Image (cartoon, rainbow, N blue to C red; front, side):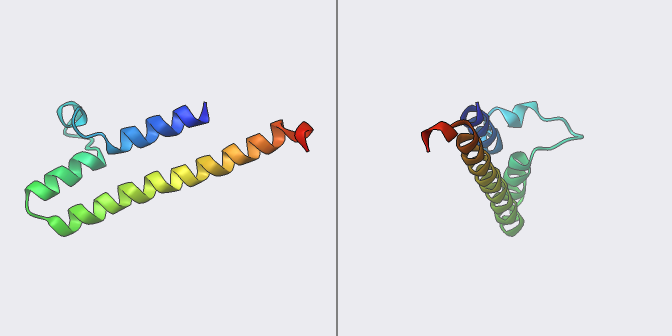
Length: 80
């Protein structure tokens, strides 16, 4: 279940093709903001936002690995 969750999270963080057509004017996903900044010629802020997206996904993955390891240790004690 954790692996499915992390896959969906990372996939949602990086998907822009479908999200571009679905966002409203009130809430703009970060991936769409990166595309809009790049189109406007603001390459520096777009790169910074892309790095933040990458760091968010990496942080969630590290938390996922730690939780997975803890769950594995708790559920597989009989193997020790």
